[in-house]
Length: 293
Image (cartoon, rainbow, N blue to C red):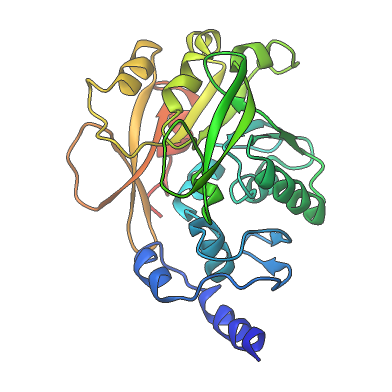
């Protein structure tokens, strides 16, 4: 009976069309039930494996069928068929799986995910969707090659971080690699988009890719950053030193806009940003007609 009720509620919430409000609505919806089975998300994606309970990402996928749609929308704007994308902090595949359609069968999506329980779920979700162009790399990107401890909060595997202690969590040791070292082993000339969602470890990841940054091997970075990002922020300084311009993603009810990161603007700024080379192809894609829809 409970499953039937949840299915009925999902029939409505899965078609919820707005980008905001989402968080307030999510707060009143029940936690993800255990052993519910595969769920159909948006973009034609099926999620076979996901955590039950209150995990924020899983709740979004369960009730709405997607997570941070403004991020996925932005990445699809920046990507074309046949191109290469890196999803760093891939978790359940909530970004990588929708992007499979954007890159097509001739493109590639490399999914970097170091948390063991999330790796297993990610692989199952890729398998059920039959996306051969998605590759799982069970490592964390950082500024050194070796190992590091990750803290995985109980009930919130999507919030796993490096070194940030929380009251109730487990600690796992994961492998780390510098992006420049990994890229040197691959026959890849250019990466169209590099999504970076690593819960505060962004700067270390970028410090592990000085060659790729300096050479412009990445067309665009889409990254999450919860701290204040101004011209003196070390992350912003690093992008500026490598000739990248940073925009902040703003969301409306159903619209997404891109505002220079250090300019005041009306609207609802998110914690998500885009860094692109000024006047380059990625910036043209980002700001092309329709960028506010």
